[in-house]
Image (cartoon, rainbow, N blue to C red; front, side, top):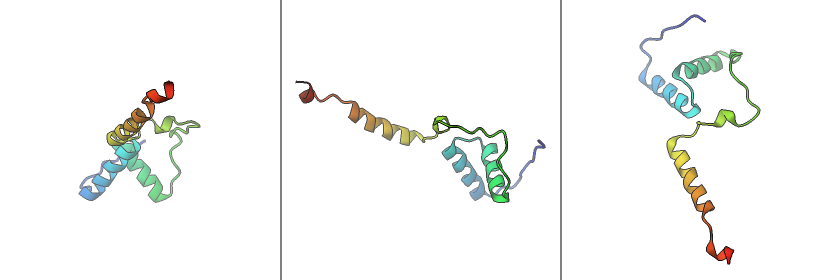
Length: 85
């Protein structure tokens, strides 16, 4: 593939690309390509993996989301001594 260099990307556009990349666990390059593909109506690249399980979700949470989930799980994993009498 031929590389393309973008200059003078508006700060708001750059911020939105960075946010999308972080949210979806993508590199900035992949996020830009996806936006261009979507906007131009191009099919996604053939090299994009397709999963039939949950592997594509691994690592997709923000640190705060993972921490909140772990806190909820910790409460559920607590043993109630009254139930074990």
